[in-house]
Image (cartoon, rainbow, N blue to C red):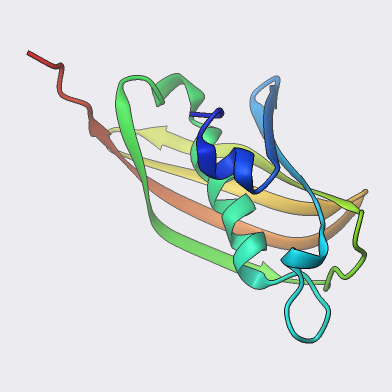
Length: 127
């Protein structure tokens, strides 16, 4: 999943450290909106990805679908060339529902916080 064309095309890097997932992107001119800050859709994409991929133990046997994405934007980001990182941690994983917490960082500064709820749907084996 981490090698998906979407992530490659958007220059998004995904890696794990301990029980956390890190989703990184270097900001380019294409990521800025008309007022010169990073578009909220870019931030939402990084947060959504981290909020789902943190459940790495389920990725191969379940389809993981976001059912609720609640983002609080705290600080705008406007520096082209800067790296931003979404860091996801599991809050709860049980049954068909998972909840994760994601912080979007520029360096050590929190620019957005989110709670991501996901639904796990068992992938049927091919016959």
